[in-house]
Amino acid sequence: MMRSFFLLLALLTGFNTAVVAADTPPDVLARTTTQEVLVILKQDKDAQGISLNKVHQLVETKILPIFDFNRMTQLVVGKNWPRATAKQKQELVTEFRNLMVRTYANSLLAFNNQTIEFKPLNMNPGDTEVTVHSEIRQPGGQPISIDYSMYQTAFGWKVYDVVIDAVSLVTNYRSSFSSTIRKSGIDGLIETLSKQESSDAVKPSKQPGS
Image (cartoon, rainbow, N blue to C red; front, top):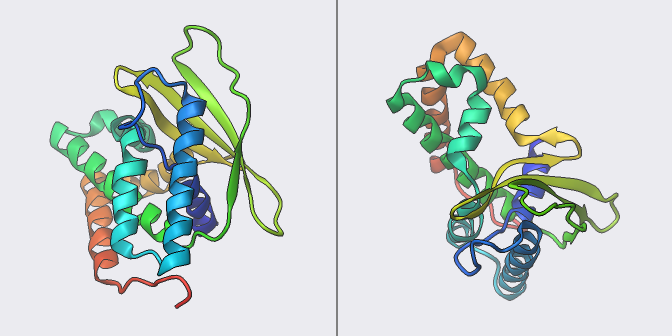
């Protein structure tokens, strides 16, 4: 379930704010830049196979800029967030961001001919929070709905949650993080995430087709 969840998430979150104006509508931002990421992936795989370094670069430049990791981490930690010190909050944001980098990078390596269709945006003048609806299509598979929860900031639209077939990223992680905090406290969660990063770092990367 989790592998499928993040494969879909990685394929659909290739946004890039560097090349668009801050007032670009969220659905336009999503559609045009997602297409850009899918083209890059296909070109590299058709040529010589995409490297892990290239995937990390795609994650850093295309995916991360559109996410508000401070807000996402606060939502994921939930009721435990006010209990954290300023230092703990900073560490939680850092570790959650690192978790997303690793997850997206591994998922993008599994890219294989998926396509995406964005639905018309239901947005009223003055709205500062919207849901961008889309659908991923896979050869031989049923379409899967993808909803992006986004809000407007001074730096453009930012994603703070993604819901895939009614499964919320924020809710999914909130459950597992809360369990860890109950057992080991906030420092225990930070330590768990840090150890997971170290463990992933020493694993050999698996290239497509290997």
